[in-house]
Length: 343
Figure 1 (tube, rainbow, N blue to C red):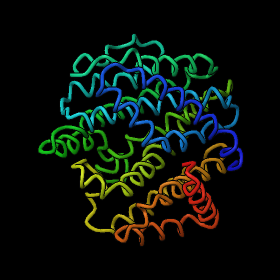
Figure 2: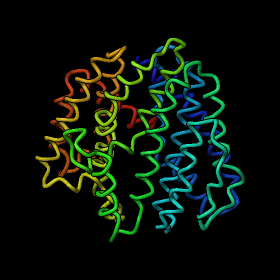
Figure 3: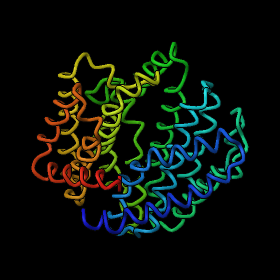
């Protein structure tokens, strides 16, 4: 699987990203062009990692990669527009993120994404990304079975992003209120862990890939949802925040791992999420695939040089050890791929 991932999926991801770079270069508005290009070049590993779902049983690899790259590019582009362009308007963020909902539901009318945003002229870039997602969806025989769940993931994601980028003096209070209402007492996790889980695109990628199966049942979709949210998705995003903690502090960005009292508590909670993810994924069809994803997440994020900074090194090494022998091997592979600048 790892050999196929590197030899088949990575080149397709690169091809798709280069296509979107060529489109981004044509954006007339300077701010939108800068953010579009920056979001692809600085965050390509998001699409590379998500591309693993193109190897899920029954998926057409090129079509699945095309969907994953387009949806992830929407996510990363909107994150930059919310984070890096000096805008803190909640209504503008929510309007922008309608693109996520439109991308996963072809029955929705296409929205005016920049209606509330100060920069607008993108020469159809964002709408093209949405359209590509919708075209791939039309090829999936069981997409109607996953539509309610994938829409729920996209809606939670959009709500999170609309709140997370508000002005620093109000964002945590708004995030906490929103997450506590959503969480209630459904899961034994903190409100910020719930909020972090809503920020992952992995559940959407898996649901899309699973919809290639003509015999997909609602029961399987429910099982996928129970395993991935909030366990795999929470682990995914907290690892992302873990390695970016210092950078986020310097940039004034909100980081969910700052809510832990110390590194020991952070380590214990990440261990807990690994355990819950592993246990839940063992009950899914193709458990070995999902366990590989979990180990791959640990290997990908913790092979980042930032993970070995003195303040993070001890936690990183313990998590890799916790992942077992295969995780350590994947970690070495990721280190090599980083060395030769593939990721």
